[in-house]
Image 1 (cartoon, rainbow, N blue to C red):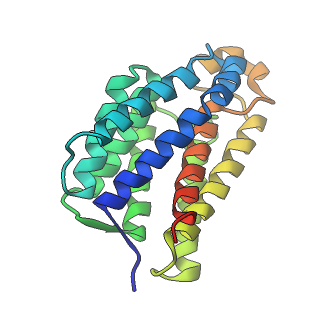
Image 2: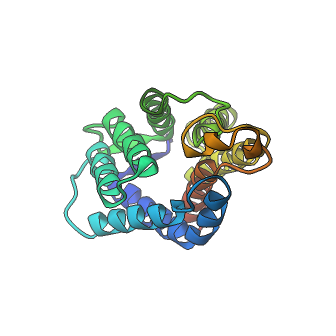
Image 3: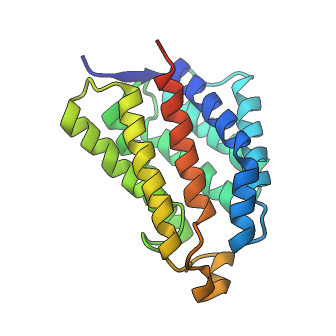
Length: 217
């Protein structure tokens, strides 16, 4: 039986991700201070508080429109480059899942790919530029591998844990890269040896998502 997620599950998932990222705000602030202005922790906190507030109110019945509204809530609550990019990622994922009352895990992987494509277009970044893309791309590869290895009935926890592990490896690998985009690029070669905070934020998000489903009976 193909594993699917409905709107109620997606809302619970996003609430868990919000809690997880708010708990990591100080870690992200410290990482960001090494490469930028140190405001990522506060940005993440504001954005996910915005998502929690949106979750407490009325939202659409379908998965796609719910994600789109949550993306808007994040970007409105956290007006910054990261806020705009993460908001875009959620909105593009939502557009890919528009009108769906349930989404298969394969469709979730496709929606994440749509988000990645949109981020590359909006941010003018490529893989290897030491950005959040370097955590998202390996996560997508791992999602597709989990489906290929286990079939469409793979559990959501296994699917997301594979993505989380790959995202963390991708984030760790950014330490060997030189920043080419944004404020961090001003450091040039000095940015090498330091992990990209945006990529680490993505890894934390996938970890929180996986932990949420792993905790389900």
